[in-house]
Amino acid sequence: MKQNNIKITFAGNPMPLSGKEIQVGDKAPDFTVVGNDLNPIKFSEYKGVRIISVFPSLDTGVCALQNKRFNKEAAENKDITIISISVDLPFAQKRFCGAEGIDTAVTISDHKDLDFGKKYGFVMESLRLLARGVIIVDTDNTVQYVEYVSEVTTEPDYETALKKAKELL
Figure 1 (cartoon, rainbow, N blue to C red):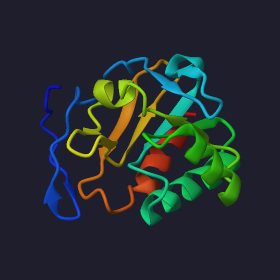
Figure 2: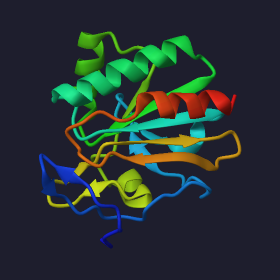
Figure 3: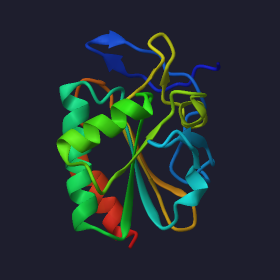
């Protein structure tokens, strides 16, 4: 897989990303992932303003915080679809969401083919995990915001991302 130019670290260690780097102004590539029911889901099935919340694994504290925060925002902003994506198995995502009351954000798994990760440049190949980040796609399917979180063990910039998403409504 082709390495991109985004520079991030994971616990202070450089972590090269592979896949195509996504940028503001790009048309959002369609991708296929797996839902909690193990059925394939295409990104193109979701319409309107979408926030893609990307993270390595639900079984870490920062990822849990990220999902709880975006789920809360989804509940308060019904016109924005929050799509949470990791390579966690769908069973783990379903368990986590049930235990944590995540009921508004959509959780999907890229574990099978890394289709999202490759098309958006979020694959930490040496770990076979996705890096942390946020992408906002508008109603015309154009990328309007991208954050590759520079240190994977820290949270994304929620305020800037949510402000941008709300401006698109």
